[in-house]
Amino acid sequence: MTNRHIKAIVAGVSQGGIVALETLLPQLSKTFDKPIIIVQHRAASSDTFLSEHLNSLSLIQVEEAEEKQPIKSGTVYLAPAGYHLLIEQDMTFSLSCDERVNFTRPSVDVLFESAADCYTHQLLGIILTGYNSDGAKGLQRIKQAGGLALVQDPEDAEVPDMPLAAIKITPVDAILTLDQLAQYLNRLS
Amino acid sequence: MDARSIAEIEINVLLEAIRLRYDYDFSNYARASLKRRIQNLLLKEKLEMPYQLIPRILYEEEIFNRFLAEMSVTVTELFRDPASFHALAEHVFPRLESYAYFKIWHAGCATGEEVYSLAILLEEAGLLDKARIYATDYNKQSLKTAEHGIFPAADIKQYHHAYKKAGGKKQLAHYYTHQYDAIKFKDSLKKNITFAYHNLVKDGIFGEMHLILCRNVMIYFDRELQNHTFTLFNNSLARKGFLSLGSKETLAYSVIDAEFETCCKSNRIFRKLN
Image (cartoon, rainbow over all chains, first blue to last red; front, side):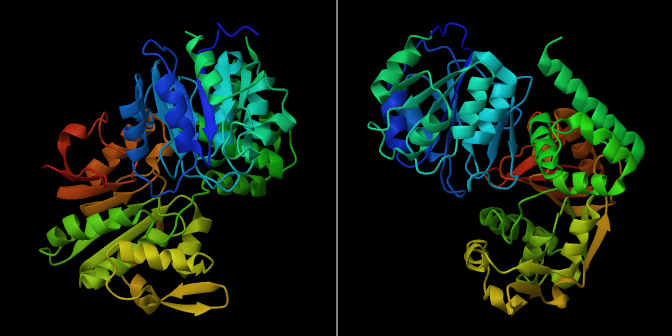
């Protein structure tokens, strides 16, 4: 599996996500040079505490995505609470408050599908811990567009449902623990 | 040419057909959401590709109406984003109080939940009688719903909670009658509200407003259409008038940024300087 061409990473995570991100993001090296765009399911009323908290733990910048913002490499973006996060062809973010998808807003599928449209085969998608099956279809779309699909090892996940749902419908490229994922990402640069 | 570029052309041709036939211009809408909505419509109409919509939309007005409904799906609720309503009452209402009467424009009001929320807070501040509220949208179906003031009661518990968080002083139930699975707001709330058709893409200014609310509309526009709309708002606002945007929207980087000051940063309330 070659991955040198990857330009961006998208990740979806739900229940158990805060601990997972606290484990994964601080392991990324200071020289990590791709954007990572994350949908973490959370209450619509949540503030920017999560991105600030993760930023304080990490060597690379972690922030909340803003609409029309150009996507920078070496930065981790979190979808703002209560909005779907999408990517435009000019590699900027856009937001929507359209109806929930898979009972949730932001939805992993919405991010993954628009990202696959933009980055096609240069995209890497990751599904982490969580209930439900949000992200499974999106990961499938990434594979269909020629991108790479990784899933957290269900044994390693606090809640295995989301990884299992993804594995069920997509032949993923690898099933990894959080520590292995961190190593994998660091080797991309 | 790659498949992506061809798909872009396909969408452009569809939008051009709509513009020529119905005079609705969606070419400056943010593309990613627009494409999702077209996909949703294709699913419902059991079609595969956007180009298949073109003959249908040209010859069947009903399909266009369904497209329009899809385009203006908006998730709105009573006292949505309660902190921003609280901030209006705190920062803006005291300034409005000094006028003998004042004008408010709620642009893109959709089905009207937020207009009624605003009317309730104005009523509690003793200001509703002095207010003239213009609630506009480009979807006539949504406007009808807004005018009726009847909403599903399914999320009523959440609305009660949001009303309190917005600074509501009484009980929300004071303002509506509950029948079966719906609530109907008292007519007295809308006595000073005018519901009217207005399309931000092509229609002109509303004169001398003291407060304009436009929430979660700008996120669907590209930069060019955002600037067009912000200019429209700037020209519609009285001196020292207020502009209230959605919780993720900002005047920063816009063409009117220099002509406004930030009144409440966290709740996206801006004030025109002169």
